[in-house]
Image 1 (cartoon, rainbow, N blue to C red):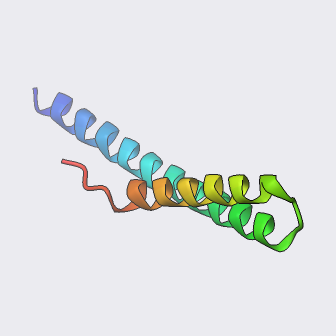
Image 2: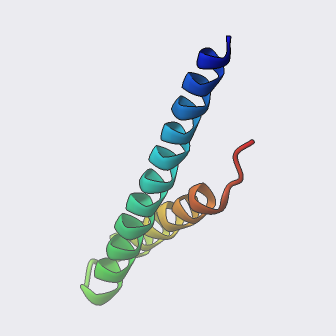
Length: 69
């Protein structure tokens, strides 16, 4: 019974680590997308891609700072 508890704890820690890494990747992709959309002349699509980049960055930050119980 105790081994099962340790296995679950190990699995939970692995999932938390994967969540934080995924959040970091989302944050980086969002910042790069927003920055590149801002520096290049994309016309009307520029605002759309800046917004998508900002949303991705926000979701990445949420995934990083989210508490897991």
